[in-house]
Length: 473
Image 1: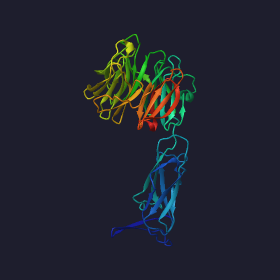
Image 2 (image 1 turned 90 degrees about the vertical axis):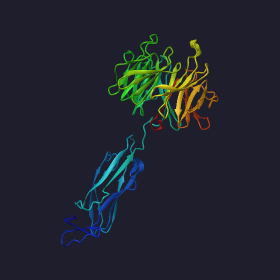
Image 3 (image 1 turned 135 degrees about the horizontal axis):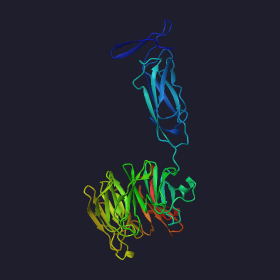
Image 4 (image 1 turned 90 degrees about the horizontal axis):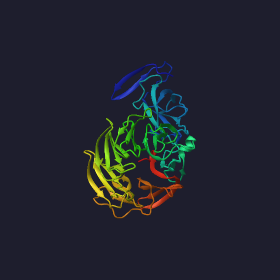
């Protein structure tokens, strides 16, 4: 039954709508109708949601409430289709219409379901101020490798047995060889060196294959391959950072030529390599702060002792910062300072030199603090978390407060044999290559009491640890 006309009278701050239907109709008591839900955020597995229509006063006859359904959520996929109308019975002030959410197995981003009242008995005057609700539906599914630890393995040089393992964030399960199993290949690369991430993509740098494999970081499905064995794009690639939508990859070049080292610049839209940036010998670890790139020159097949600075807007080297021999780690602290850890030259070089930790003010690229190790001490694997620096030295892990002016003399954990390590969320993660021919392990320690939580068998020569998805730091 439709309301054919309305007369609006304002008296004593009360609004009363009067409608005329026909001479036989009972005069309804009219009041504004609003829409509401208990909460505005739901998981797709929450089932049924109560959508409530409420009138300020009861009507003497049934009224039809028309509504529009919109948003990014899809009917029959994310929720059971709605009729688009509800009937508020005579004498009632509320009506509840159920929305049934559908729980599927697809991994999706959060979606919105918007319900808006469009008319009351074909007219607009009775629509209340709360005329729409927006529901956010959050997916309760996850990709196979979304939340956990990725362990990268070099494999044996020349054997083509590089691999990636996945360890769940609760440390209860380990799956080795995930690239091979997902993409159904027997071999995919030689000497995996590092991984860089951008959005849902992972860029795996394969040193001796002279290429980068691009995968979806959560499914590990192959997306693209950049470079290859012809060595026209890369020559001994090492590490990668992504700045302003482009990838920057350090390359040692030919070990016999100290003058051919470079940074390969990748167009990530079409996965092609653009003109290289020529740099000093042995570019290794690479990090960025906004549009400024910092490269630690470990020395490649020789030795070096600088951090070069590159302007990513011009792709030009602007300056270099002298540190100690063989810088191997770069970390930013919460104040924006750059910490560079140098291992020093080992004894086998015949020119052994001590390791060193330098704090760099990136506003003027000057070293503001230096802590020097003993000549025979060669630290590596620097991690910086919550104002504390962790590093690995001679089978032990040491912790240093970033404000300290002296190096610690007592280790946190001893008796280790790590190739690399990282600290995240109160835990220490280290990889042990064992005998370098059989499977290695991922060791996880609780840093609140420095006790071993678990040792997970991974693959051959684990070399780096990354935290994926919601577990990423």
